[in-house]
Image (cartoon, rainbow, N blue to C red):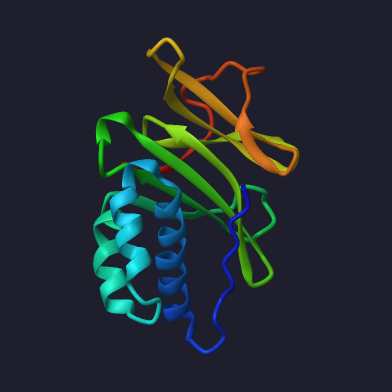
Length: 173
């Protein structure tokens, strides 16, 4: 999955960040099957009508957590978005991980998450910290999950057992 978003040079820094968050959420909403109605409504609104688009997106942002965290210790923060599904919050949501590449943000991970907090583990894998969470197993049970950076993206890593108090909290609900 590749999501890219370029920054508009005509805006000041604060406006760029705000605009970026709205555009990222707009793209994320388009990918969520549970939000088909909202996605369809956004498609009918002109992209230049920022106020109307933001009014539609704000309730989704309010149910989400957005955090900048340096996952690869390079001094630049990656963007984590815990996207809680508005249609059925009991099912949990998705975590999106974005890395800045020049003037664009690339999605380097998307995985289901049933819980906050997400945990940044002290151990690095392929240059990035692993992320721990709870997810629903194929049998419908709540199980710990570890997502590591492999092959350019975060993927479920079943090689390691989780230790509950390892790492630091990076998202708190």
